[in-house]
Length: 349
Image (tube, rainbow, N blue to C red; front, top):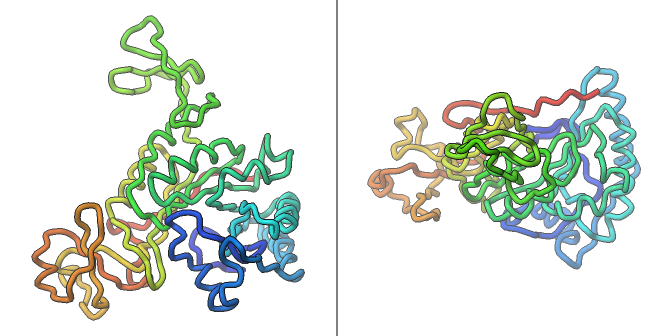
């Protein structure tokens, strides 16, 4: 689809339609809802087929490639919003092979591939991609919480893509990424950091056996002009859930991702709050009329969100933020009053 409403891309392209749920982030999948409306859910679930796309649809990337050339720019294409390219399903075998050939022939497009199945990436790409992905491929994974960050990121780090990115949407809990941002660039270990610190006869300083980075063992600081580590993850997208049954996102979770990215020099893109947005206990004090809110309110306590009664006195008695279900548009995309729409700095030839 041209002119996508997804803020971090330009167009979307789907090699098929359909998928099945694999993790908590899939619970309220918008693509599944769409399939239920248009196809009675025929393409969702473990025993379902995948809807094939028309020939006219498959010709779109070639047209976008010409457009990008004529306009002297790169057009970003998100693949896929209605399926997972790396789902190991028989209906995807031929479309996936066709996609990879199209990617190689459309150098003016930046292909943003996103998956929840990173364990399949290197098994399903063409053999010559295993050593080096095409320069116009950005490879991303969805990580909605710490559990799936730690499961999926090691597979992503094995992918030789020019850009690796994380989509933390819907963000369902606080995620710590420091150990992955600090991954040793010369080690083949991808279990978090991967450094091998050895005392080098100059206590309390240590040197990594792989990348030769030199650090103060007491504080973890890099010493002098030793090897400068660049994060193997280049971009993080953060967003709350949208849709009728959306779950709230805590502002502290979003802030934590932003601050970790800033410290590591990683591009941070705050996409949206989603259906729910946190406000102070008295939202009118922020200049927002109460009539923009529905009657649904939630508070966060003991690591869980709880629905509040409609009585505002109960809300004001709770000395914390309250999450109001305002709808995606009203909730907006400002984090601490600022817009974050950063992209990785990559020179594409």
